[in-house]
Image 1 (cartoon, rainbow, N blue to C red):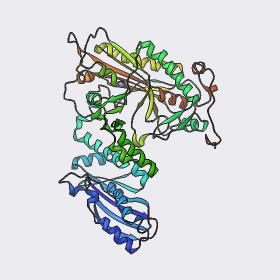
Image 2: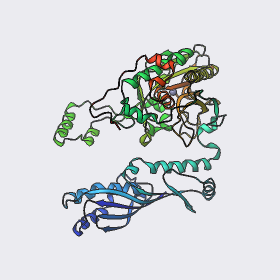
Image 3: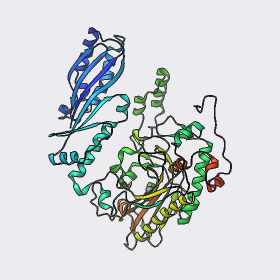
Length: 523
Ligand SMILES: [Zn+2]
């Protein structure tokens, strides 16, 4: 891959000649770009092809291969430049802007033609083609775009499409496995109400003080009214779905050792989608230094802290059913006595990176997770029931929904091949979505229930066997509480009087939202 960048570093004042000389010294120091680059790959790291000073600006023309890519290179310059000239010349860096960034993703001629004819659109950039490959072109990217990581996503986007073409039948494993095309709608319900609410609920909930954005990304503080609604839904889902299928409640651990994730093959499929946890070293003296440094500097010395932590050993549960498979690790089971567990004991986590927004896509969420094990017939019947009751509940509440064949069952997501001779079900995942009427340009729904069958995937991974050698399968259904509430508010709005009786009764009396003189902000 080739990265060509034209960028501008803007300083706080005109860059005088003396300052320029110092900056040029930094620009000539190639070691800045070579840090972390494996031996023999030095040629692939960022290079400065050309630069020019103009008033407050330093214009840069950089190129790179795939190591210390040009956009990372330009950001890396910031620190050494400031160390060199910041104090000495009383100058700061105001801004880094990438005016134009051309990334060439190599591709065979026949694929280039195929992409061209399907008119590939990549979010937030232009696409061009030449004989070397696909060019994606970004213009005027600032700090915030860089932080959102749109470059990597765009590259991934193109590469995914290329890979699909290159391995025509082997797309994602999901497509191989699925007997019904992903995204096919298998059941649907239209609301009987004449009109639905049409606004985005997140903002209104914020203005009412039902939720408050937490300092952590993709996290919310849910205050009393929202919590009441959550609990109402939780209780309905337990009564109307989980108890009807007959699951036994357990309390699942939420801090999951990496080894479990490895056996699940989750580390292979979605390693970038989790929070990793490092326990500290038990060394009070070393921590004393950390505390002292913090008191003196009046900031958190993160670098020092890193040295006090052990290697990452856990993740925060992303799927919630992880402990179930681990529970049965190398057990002999009897498929005539199947297991049906469920857990609603706490938060689970996904790292959505820049993707987190509103109340529907969050990094921390509540879910009722059902997970079961037994014969293939039992596992399929249980999955169908768990979904059917969810659909019935939506109908009772007159919530418009549809159920489609999922294209990303969590245990296959991101994976390309399977060589263990695993048995897969005909449809690994169904996903039920509640319509979100405020999204106008397409019919969009929030996924509220996802019903999965894993075939022998986890049975194989955890060495589980039936004592008579019969087939054992597993399945899991997640009822996303956060998502159900979001879908409900999208269709019904935030006025208690407008809600269906079933919910009103569950809630009884709505508690008041907290407020201060300055919050929530009134418009
Ligand atoms: Zn699950």
